[in-house]
Image 1 (cartoon, rainbow, N blue to C red):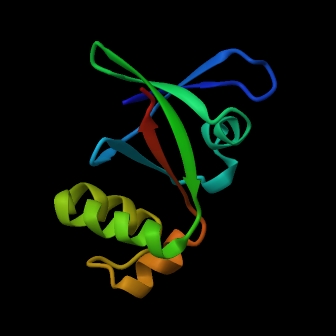
Image 2 (image 1 turned 45 degrees about the horizontal axis):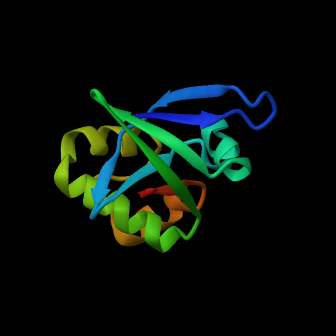
Length: 120
């Protein structure tokens, strides 16, 4: 998906391509740069954003999550769904593959996850 946030300083639209997963109606994205990612910092200031998926555009409200337990749950789910891709990312970050729950929680401590809920 492409996340379109409002720049926290400029007020201008900012586009960021991100890998995502679905959780019911919500979209889940994770920042490998944690709270330093520009899109995360923009969402802190302006939690409403747009998603573009193909030709669809969806208005969303962001909930930022920093709980390592919740983030590690999502990472484990991603690893189970796409072991080669996610395993490559984890290895590049020094996480053993296959990861244990403790490995994922340690890694997740520096990450930020966003739950993007569609607005009516």
